[in-house]
Length: 364
Image (cartoon, rainbow, N blue to C red; front, side):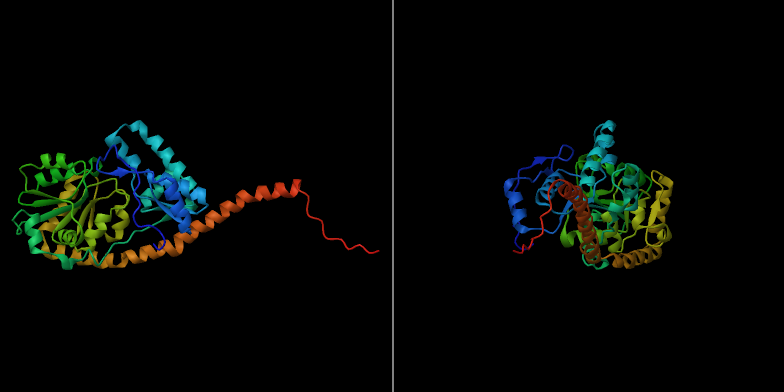
């Protein structure tokens, strides 16, 4: 962005649930001054989080329209990490934040329904933001024998399941252990990191599993494209960006029919672009994985169909929709809200302040 400093250091503190994740309010006189000098037309903040409070304060101080996009379904995570009684207070925080915003973007129909059930905001101030995928970076052309050797621990001829993502308790990754117990001769590679990694490594000790740690760039592209099947057992995804990236890489997905994933694999595409299984149903999941692992022609055809579908979901089109449609809608709501606030003041002014008299022409 022209005119705005690229690097601004702000005080932070570690997230209680994810010690490696720094949190910051990002609210200081210097930050406010820099934003004021930049003169933004709109402020876009990610919710929920700590920094969103700073964004909200700056937007209100400067009188700038505010868009919030919802990315992490914290109310679903809370019972797995802390106490169930904290769920409703979390919803209260979410209501406060999103009612203060001019427009809310949600990544899936499931989240939109949850917002409606929780009475977060009115439906006319919610927009469904179908995120795109970088189809150039996540492409079948990145399939690599060397990467497959690495992911399979030197056994590239064996069937290979991959999982990419953040390893958290809420991701239901222990379900994959039950799956692998029933798939002798199949290998699994975990690409990523997170607070649950050490427990996962202990859980899969002695099994044909590889943990690569974090990857990025072309290395990550190769990891996606070098697997046979991507398995996603999580039941709490707001969307499932890794599912988009796997399908774009030409690798079929077997995912839980939950959260935002059915938005990526709708009912009319099940069995064509990828598979969904009933959450918690081991036999349903196993049957679909085994079909893909044992029938290479079927797997390759599904991978090509998935790739063709993801080419329609390019991230550039998704970004263009935000700029041309959603931001304009937020500005319209902001102007409407401001007009509604000013109207009573105008009425009071007309009632109690004398109108300026017209100039009189006096003849002598």
